[in-house]
Amino acid sequence: MYEELKEEDIVNKVGGRFKLSTLLQKRVVQLVRGSRPLVATTKTDRMAIALQEILEDKIFLDPENEVAFRSPEPQTEAPELDLDDL
Image (cartoon, rainbow, N blue to C red; front, top):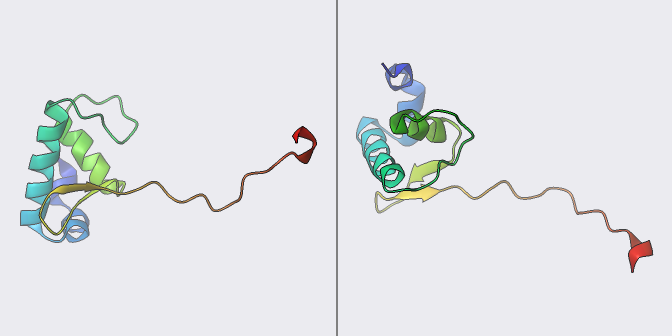
């Protein structure tokens, strides 16, 4: 059904099967309650959405075993300024 769950990579990424199960359960509850997906998808299966969020490093368990969100990548280049507009 969910081939990703059979892979050890996702288990190791989260820190073990218990943590993976906990993260999935808590994130699916958030999605059921109306939280928006953090990944671009046309899927409606909330478990599949949560798995994709984990695989894309969008969510993780914090030290209190709550769902935490990774902040977007910091901008590496300074924005260009047009000094003629000043």
